[in-house]
Length: 141
Image (cartoon, rainbow, N blue to C red; front, side, top):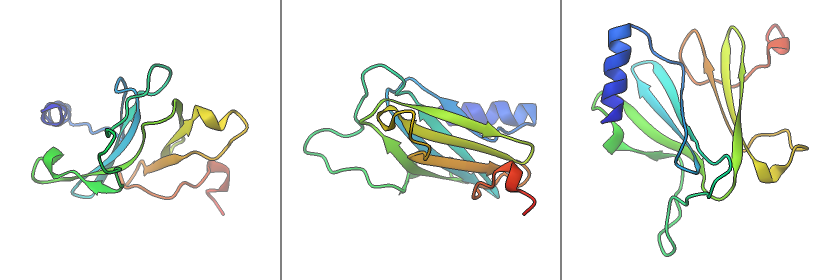
């Protein structure tokens, strides 16, 4: 399992990432892995410009999120499927400062005039917890 290989590499290095970003599946997916007090978003941002692959087939029920994914767990963590888009092309936008990492998903169909992401996740870089985003210029208020 890829997750076990990632864990082994992180254990060996003594460093754990704040988020995992990947692509290729031709759709957007976001998972949250919780292990102890650390919450790590895993994103598949693969719908940037080639045929979008649906996650379900005609006649199958729609996917409802959030959805626990026990088959992805190593037994000491939990993995939850949080959000997805398997219909649109789209892109991710990353905002980082000294305190937070925010990853946003925007479908291309929203056009450049849309400013609100369809999905977003923010990680507190000190606590490794998912938090509500506070823009840096407003952080002292």
